[in-house]
Image (cartoon, rainbow, N blue to C red; front, top):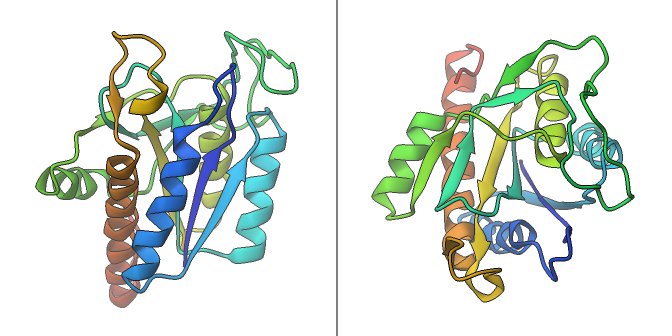
Length: 213
């Protein structure tokens, strides 16, 4: 089973393309025969990670792909590393603005995504979807959720997961200089990442070996 998550709007935006893209990606994956659940997370430190971890316990997915908005990115960003730091330039949707705070007290400095990033990147290129591997998910709620996810999956090796950032959607371009992408392209890209991960998960299960990056 595949679990996809996106975020609610924040910072004055009327919509968050990560959630719209996740909903469309779920339709594509279901049409391809996958069992998919979706989750809209609040842009709130603590509450977002708690909601995601509760879904992990309830659903026990094989693959988890979380998505969030990163304005200014030119395509999909496949995030490699989650760091144990909450440091917000702007308040979250509950008004919190942590500074230099750990996501998990005493947790490791960072975690690598366990999604097959290189394979996903190749498949995205073949599909004509602009994408790259990113070395930083920032220190806002996206990274908060990414780190909490990977911290939990460290004790659940049968589940693989990670985070994908999406750019602004074209209809919500905040300025003429900001890169944008069609929502349908984002959705197709997230579906490709999830399909690539599901295939990798199946192969490692058949071989009886742990999933790897």
